[in-house]
Length: 161
Image (cartoon, rainbow, N blue to C red; front, side):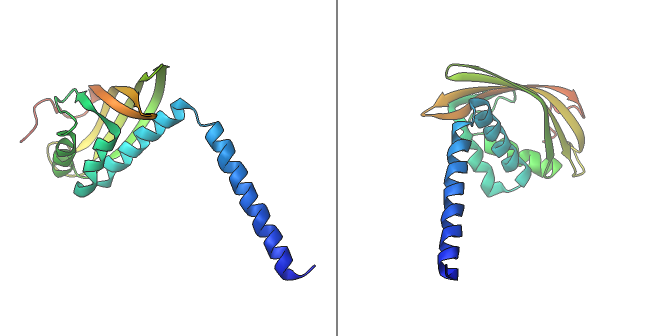
């Protein structure tokens, strides 16, 4: 057996292994995993501190999205940008995630810990009890609502703007 043939056999086995792994991963991805992925993508956008990237949060929101701050889908990137200006790029951590799915809707409840490093109105550690509504639209989970109760941190009920 020559070296070229051995390399082709190894490459073929590698490709076949990848295809099998990818297929198995898709089969075992649960709806809860898909919702977790949406939350993780939103956290990455918020933690990025990138003004141009903030508009991509709307990709994960339903057209009729509402939240505790009174913002709708179109206003959400602006709300994120104000938080960055007032508190800097946050570090976010989700704990105690509980997802309840009922058909094409779901509720995710969790604690969100956030730290804003910049001096000013938002500086410091914050904690929120979150209740986030999801709706499945064309096979994708989208956030339809976000409600929260502040558990810890400076009073942010009256923004310092």
